[in-house]
Image (tube, rainbow, N blue to C red):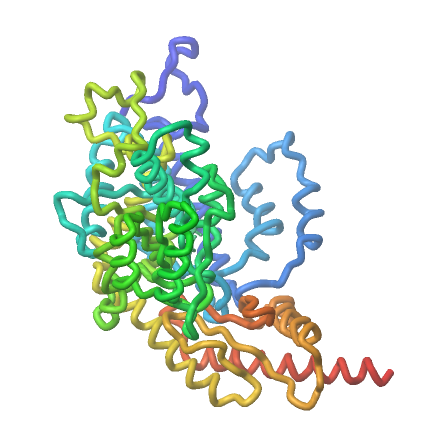
Length: 502
Ligand SMILES: *Cc1c(COP(=O)(O)O)cnc(C)c1O
């Protein structure tokens, strides 16, 4: 093996802290040390959180002098334990049921070593070689799962659903703008994006970033299941067309963040087709159904989309970040392609697969490798079974919620979330006091570390929310969370009464 040499330093390592064939001993020992610290920490985790407040940690982090290095990984890891590892939030813990975070597939975590050690960049083939072909196989595989025509479809990995949605809306905007002429600002001001009131905020943010303004994203009312009301959508579009507005895109959600609701994809697709709007499906969360053996049909109609967002770092058990935007027609990427002579010259576009042509990022991680290794080691069927298990747990827990008189579901379970309120009959609390009580229940569970749950607001009422993405969680774990919610809620009510009496 040839060490990294520099003529200036006469065959000595120029800097033995950089990874190269001459520093592999150091790399191995430090990586091993890091791995040991991780496994020690994970073995010691007893609760999803220690419940820190920002002020508990800020002093520790601020006290560190970044200009005085410790000199060894062992020491910096010791320090890390105090400022981060000890009080980190552990998504794999069975009492973690807060946000859309999943426990991660071990093959994917192991694959991360390749991603960062080789540090491949996905922008051009000449920086990535096989990695580009691997990513392209995975986007083609996802397109096939969606039911897109194999030869026409294409896709790109992104950092997350927010970025995938932004890129989808950018491509949709370009498609709409290409049908008109005149100065750009005027062509933009009449464009409208339709999405449900329960859609992820990234769609409305995309409207803002694309120069359309937040108000260009129109939130359509939902039905009792929090699915977009296709009739209301039709009325709104008809009304807007009469006012001279242009339906640029309809973004349906397949798995809303709060209720896991899947908008009626077939009827929305037909309407989009009728009015010439781009049809996007935000399946950031519900994308896992693509691999489900029992519930795949819930996504029926997704194959009619012009573009689909899938977050592998949610329902495919991948480490962050791992997401993709998949397009029905590869040609649609052309409106965002930029060719730079020093990177991806247009003259070579035909013969060289340069992913940067389709990406909003330039230098980009080889995140696709994590999913690839997961599929090659565990397989897609296994991933689908894990997501099915999570759905099954949510459905069983729904029955458990209905058994508890103090808990009331806001809507039927549709994917793997439960939104419900804690009731305090006979206590005559008004809406704002109930909202405060709800926040306090969640806060107390967090502070004690007993469980981590989420909260959301539905029609002005604060509600508790459980998001299940851990197939290893048991019904026992989950019913313990419900019991803890009721216990803490009643404790808080009692304290409130005592406070009033005192
Ligand atoms: C999580 C989520 C997003 C955002 O994805 P990120 O990966 O967090 O950027 C968008 N849409 C839906 C429906 C989501 O659940």
